[in-house]
Amino acid sequence: MDTRSDHDHSEKRLDLVQDARIDRLQTGDVNDPESSKLEDSADMPSGSTTSASPSPPRHLSNAGRRRSDVGDVLARHSSVDDAGSLASIDRPPSEDEKLPPAKIYKPLSFPVLALLMPASIFGVLARLGLQAITTYDGRSIFPLAWVQAAGCLVMGFALGMREPFGRFYGPLYTAVTTGFCGSLTTFSGWQLDIFESWINGTASHRDWFRNAIDGVGKTVFTLAIALSAVSFGAHLAKLVVPRVPTVPPPSRQVRYAVSALSVLVYAAAYPAYFRLPAAYRHEATAALLFSFPGTLSRYLLSVLLNPRLKLFPLGTFAANVLGTALLGTFQVLQSAQHPHPLGANACSVLKGLADGYCGCLTTVSTFAAEVDALDNRKSWIYVTLSWLVSQMLLAVILGPSIGAGHVSRQITCVYV
Image 1 (cartoon, rainbow, N blue to C red):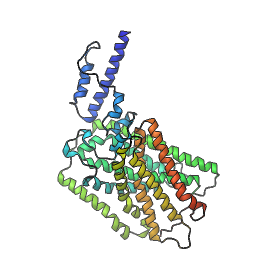
Image 2: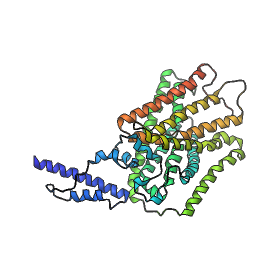
Image 3: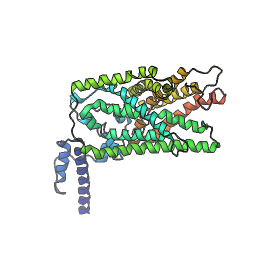
Image 4: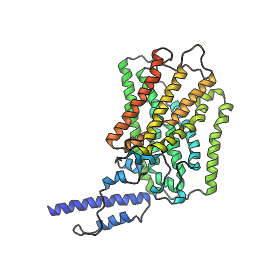
């Protein structure tokens, strides 16, 4: 019995050493004293003793691990118990990645906010482009599935690359995750798509049971696709990180130039709206105007509210629910049936608010990463509350208007 116990203890100690070596390879911290102490103790005979206190089991350190190591949590299929530890998903890399003070940027610093501007624009353009090319007769996959899958895949990969981003240029990480992925994916659009399935918003020839099947299918398959994509992205990053070469960070002049160029890129959206043909306004240029305000609203809610609650990320929840309610309101305005229809400019602005502001205010990529990282009970609570509250808000906003005949099931706005 003693021999078997010693053998099991040795195997557990070797597993801990292997995990420690993997972490040191990923972080590049070959001089980590805790990991070295663990490896030295593993080399001792099983019957030897040491005065050092035993290291805690690895699986218990997932919740108390560095708060920002969400990519590693996803790649290891582990979970965290405190939702506040997920607040770092949207923030630039910090001292948790053992970065020198010169490479640490505050969440609301100008370089971080400036890079969110072009990232939001590129995210909106990618979303609208993917929806355009995946919308066709006879399609087997609904267009938003492609959007959510692409954004969540990039999100998972970026989470796993958080430390290399931080060593190069921290604001770039926030631009990719919060800016691009958050603007590419859309929680409000997903919820409205589900609600339109309940009411048969496409006027398809089917009964109530098929409406329910369509709504449930969009719910379940979007969740499955998003969670799988973010986890797959984190696994890809885990394979890539040890092979990422050390890239020198940009100089001060380059950083200033990038920030200035980012502001100019977003500023160019205003003349693009007025100078380009009016037919482009409802298709893209109006959405570009409202992209950064939506992203900035979500980012501020995340920074201010996500650390405040242990049950689930309150900031992301508030952004998704608020954006869904606003999208329902804009949908009512675009579908209203009255003798004096809205003008083309007003319709284009409403379309821009729906695709730009609401699309960027809400996110599936961050939502999926948080759900995947939380423990089972809290993740189910988070998903259920987010889904139920959003559907109830849409029912309250759209239901009475549609039932009274004041609002059509399809958009009545004329854009040109």
